[in-house]
Length: 474
Image (cartoon, rainbow, N blue to C red):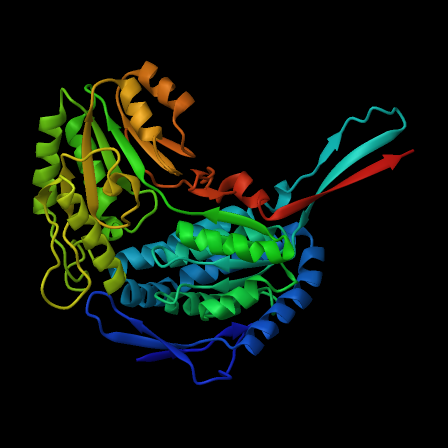
């Protein structure tokens, strides 16, 4: 079993307490690592390190910060095998998928490094002929980055890369379910020669995380997580009036029009629903199918769900892997049971398998109603509910009748229907004839309870800045 220490000021530090966090392989339930839980004193050291480093980091020309990020991308690629092995062991992903996540994280780092020469302010016309208005973009200072368990390597770089290129320093709290890969990333930070204190990575309890996020020197908190976690971050941000960027829950609707390629749509949706065991905030969770093709499409889904095998991906990478822990599986199963009790029909799956590992079979529910919990609440697992509709207008109304608005999907060949949805869907993203994949040059931002602010692209990078208006009279 491996042991990991917290990473402060470019060094792995000896723990100040005996409190450890045990990390388990969700496919075997075996302990794979132990990590030190940061004390309050360690968090203070990390904050002071980040604060001291930020003064020099923000003054570097942005092209020099970009060069540092290019070196970090190279170091991530060089360590992709080690990062991938740690991620596979703690998440249940296949080694290939986990390693590819590290390589993709290097790519998003490289993408943000290229903003170095594109960080711009504005010159705004003044009402007076003898003055100029200059709007400058400045770093916020210290950013607390709260990382989820589902894609912890990619999300970590998705957050710290734009924070760093804009002149901020970061405090990273990885999920206690998947912290090992974060400490392997810390080794890449050392390899890349980033200045001490620019990146600090610590595991900790919720109490210590609150102390970190509410420290007076923390100016921004960025989270990918649940709605409940987002509410806690908003509470934390009230203390210092810190900026918050939140990517929260999702309940992606997929609308299947009569002219859709049903086989393609079914294949895409099954892949979306079973990749990483459905633990993806943009995974399709509810499917609205036109009544004229409803029976045919349900038949396709049922066939594909029934044939999708699950198990330990270390033994067979083609399997669908496990959920992250026992509580996640129990919560999902209880939602399925309540849906069946409320009138849903279980077509496939819907049981807890015997044996080790937090596996749950691909589960398909029909005869669902819009007001059901299974339609209204995020499952974050391999569970799909299907409902019929009669017209595109009705499908749009059903898709929008929801607390979440992260991503949405439409299968059709009719450009009029595409434009109708493009203009009226209440979601941050609309994918046409494909399922979500979050292109990192786009902007991943949710409506409603799906979040505030966003990640990726120019606009995601600018989330990590604040403005200064200079009124220059001459």
